[in-house]
Image (cartoon, rainbow, N blue to C red; front, side, top):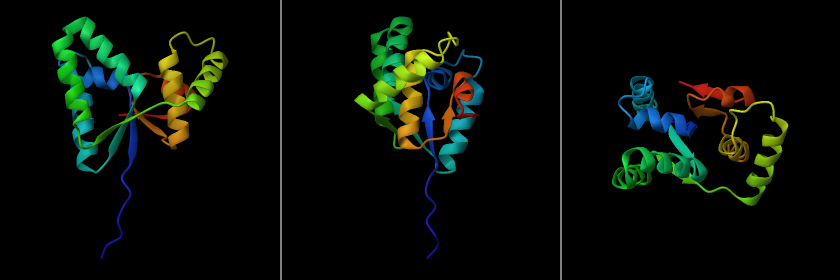
Length: 142
């Protein structure tokens, strides 16, 4: 019997979700190709609950609640994506990161909460088009 390989776990950021679900986004083709390739390779994706909230709120404002509801359903029913809840220590760590990077205006609290969650979960790579993940020290994919 062959050795079972542990699947790679990648954090899924709001910018990647937008690119995936918006065919007019400049990164749509790149995002779609990356997702298809990595899923076929056996990768799994984690979405922090704050990222899901940010994405669904944006979709609701720009495309309407019905679209937002369908997007949420497609994400939570996925077999290769799981939603991770933040905890109190994640919030404390996020505030610390937020304050430390006070000169990076684009690095918002949702990003910092994502960083804290990634650290807690031991995730080193993020599917994102947001350079702040690299600034903080994570590997930005694709």
